[in-house]
Each structure stands twice: as C-alpha cells, then as structure tokens.
Image (spheres, helix red, strand yellow):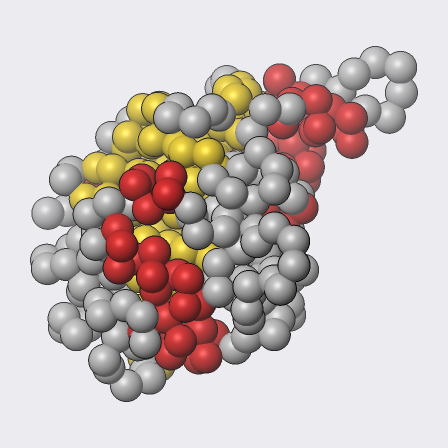
Length: 289
C-alpha cells in the first residue's frame, strides 16, 4: 500500500484549555487516499498544519464544537485565505456545529458590512448522523455530551477507521460511533468526574472504558487536562483497556490500522501503555506491541 493511501492521523496539538510552549491546542490532520482534512482548529494549530499542507491544499475542515481551544485558528485561517499569499480556487468546505458561520462573522466583522466568511469557507452545519464524503474519506458525525452543540466523527478509508471524540462525557452515541474502529482518539481532560453538575469530559479511566466498550483496536488519549500528566493519563486508561494506549503528543503521526490492529504509530512514538513500558523513540515504524 502506497504511503498516500494510508489512513493517517497527524497530531498538530493536543493541549487544553490553552496552548503550552511546545503544544498547541486541539488540532489534527487526517489524511488518506490523497484527501486531507483539518480536524479541529484549536489555538496555535495553523502553524504546524503548514508543515504538512497549505490551506489551499486542504480538502475540508471539520470542527467538533466552538470552544476556542478547538476552533480559534479559523479566525487566522480566514485572513490567510482571503488577505495574504493564499489563492483559493474555491472556498474550503467547512463542517461545523450549527451557528458556526454567524459566530465567525460576528467576531470578524469590524464595520457595517458583514465579513465575507463564505468567501473563505463553504460552511455545512453538522447534525446527529451527518455524513459527508471528502475524496476517499467518509466522515460520519454524531452528537455527543458536552453541554453545548458538540460532535464526534468517524473517518473511514480503505477499510480502516479512526474515531475522534471531540470533547464529551462518556455517552452511548460515542460508543456506538466507535464500534469496532481501528483507533479511538479520545479526550481525557478530567482528573475525576465532578461531584456535582453535568459531566462534560472523559477522565482517563472513562477513555479506557469507552475504548473497551466500543471494541476499539487501540486508544490514543488526547486533550489531557492541566491536572493530569500524559504519563498518568496513559497509565490510568491502560488499567481499564487491554489494547495499546498512546498519548497524542504533538508532531506524532499515527498510521491507522496499518498491518495488524494495534500497530505502533509512524513517526515519534511516546508514552506507550497497554501492557508495554513507557517509550520515547524517533522511528519510521515500530513493530507491533
């Protein structure tokens, strides 16, 4: 299989609720069969995105919800697309929650005339069960439990599948969407579930439980909060999920479903779990765990 045909996940950033010195907020490049989708555009992710693809080379953008740590770089992408050295042949398809266009326009409009958001982005609103085809990639979105309009997505290509949770508490719709996937990219923001009020995030244990209930091939924890270390998040998730567990370190490239289920990612692999010891390596491809 040619490298361009692989379903791949490139981690642009995974910090929350603000970028750290060496880690932007949530953002990922998902590619396969020549198609490239920017999944979440959190603060700081536009910069590393350009190591892999220009804005005018993107096939689509998909946004899970409108919190700034998942969407703020749409604002700078707008200026790049219309007022800099980027020349779009057509607006970039943008899949986002209801109200995305008005939210962007409200922020970007500086006078009596509404900013031409639609000149940069061809907006399509997500809904529960929304399906889209982006080149070789099939995207299915489900509404999830985050106390606001929020979505998870399943990306499929060439018989491989990646599910991204977005931000959400454990919920039946995420588990159903992730059923049998090759890899679940799941947030693990919370150190523990709240004693009172609505739960809106996963703990590391929740992430492990969701992966297990969905029979995912591997778990990649992301969006790890400031009161949990990546090492602890991987260890805690591994205690609840028997498959491979990795951390979404910025710059890591995961090859989804390559060879056997549970193969170690392409690129820099770090903070491994799932029965293995913690690792940090710079490699092309590591053997199965």
